[in-house]
Image 1 (cartoon, rainbow, N blue to C red):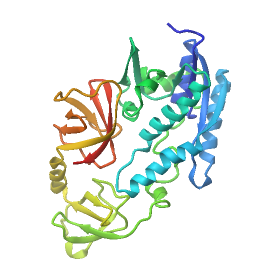
Image 2 (image 1 turned 60 degrees about the vertical axis):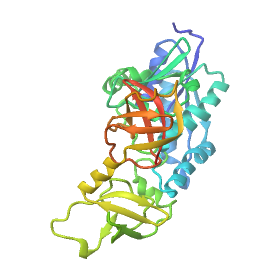
Image 3 (image 1 turned 180 degrees about the horizontal axis):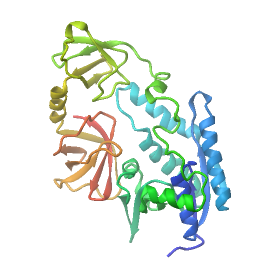
Image 4 (image 1 turned 90 degrees about the horizontal axis):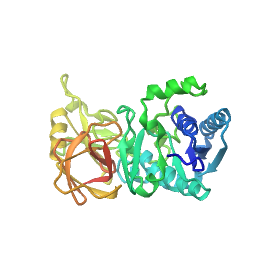
Length: 358
């Protein structure tokens, strides 16, 4: 039963999903307030942020609900932007979206809105949360194609127990239809892609080159022979098929496409191989370790078979866990250090951690 005195602060991005989260909660009788928070914008680029804020404000005006703005630029820079640059410089593959959820939306932002009197926090994430008899669980959304539970796998149980995900019960098409029916100005607005502080106009790697020093280095084959050169190992990606040049003496008319198999940022080298060699390397990764684990309830049962995901909307792989060790039953594709792994028991997301090679 809804207590009409319960206050819900809804994090608004300016997009249709968070806007409909606000609309749905108001319709259900909650005392809702829309809140937009400012994030760090490198290079002083404020236009993208300004447009989002104005869109969020317009939605609140249309729905006749209070609108607030919080400035989290400093916290965002320290906890998300600096983290991303640091991880790339270490040769890892960071996930700023997961860290933003953990540290900002369901971290600093949650602390602030609960301190302002909110009983609940709500967002436009496609996920579901259930709390029964003090037991809180995180589930995939109804729309499997839009499910964002992977991005929420590092959020603490204490915050999830006070969080609402209204759009998680709907298909994305239904959300756009409902938004159109009530006349929201952003009903057909394009979904945001990539990292929020970069915006739409620039590729991630082009952006990162401004902050991460790139030095040319050697490309090795699986025998350790130098067969070419690259322009920088720190921004290369496991499984990538470009970003390097092969010496003419190693090129043939029927040469197979080459994949990045390994990076060594200290030696500034990358190792490449053909599809067969890449597949062989992948199959050799049977076990990885997790650090910075977050289990929403109890840790996974030792020896039990679960499913796991190593990227948003990526394939689900069968695995088993023992303490901080993950044993893969299925072969994961293009696994890289620093990525996050989320563990699933059917539709329930148990949590996860950050992956490193043993």
